[in-house]
Image 1: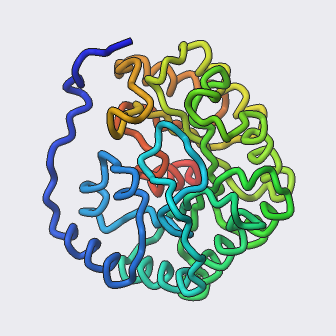
Image 2 (image 1 turned 180 degrees about the vertical axis):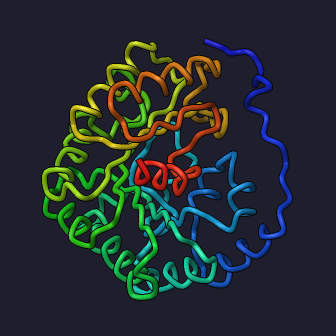
Length: 288
């Protein structure tokens, strides 16, 4: 199935902000990865210009083979024990009030990298206890003890993306399990109700609208607070193909439906990504 060329609503204007080189310079000085660069995010120039970035810990090689993702899965790197302190330093130097930390999936590690997440959160708290910490974590292969390590570090938000509808899992993310991802979000709320949970869905992979609404319902039933929905853009012709460019009015339908379901905040539009304007979403939800 082929789709027409990229529509106008997906064309990102080139932005040249005064902070762009400053952010890149700090990341290079501290040898840090960002999901902005590794995943080729369409909003990365805008975010860098706002002096923000989503830090990606535990290396830049993933142990899984999701067909939508631009992060490579070659030889996995050793865990760097000094990385947490460098992430904390970068967050402070960038003047962040809300920091987002994600990682590649590391199924090779006994705890999936949970201890490293916890140490990174702790390092940030050690430098600035007022900074809001949001973590976007892998499913940890369903290991509840590993999840407890992250929860104990008390991030304000734990995000885990559901990514797509159950029917497409085998083709899009064959090493993941839909029910396991839902269970992770449910467990966070059971273990610490004060932590907000978040998830994200990609549109345009061949899903039906009713399937998306069903996933949204599943997320709410498992206590998910925040939701992001954005258009899938294939990183290359070798990746899973775009089946549809979803129109902005459909994204608005999803947003309105999500708010009616009881989500605290729903960001739904073609260029939305998991951590795009994350601070604004958190602040809006807290204000309510």
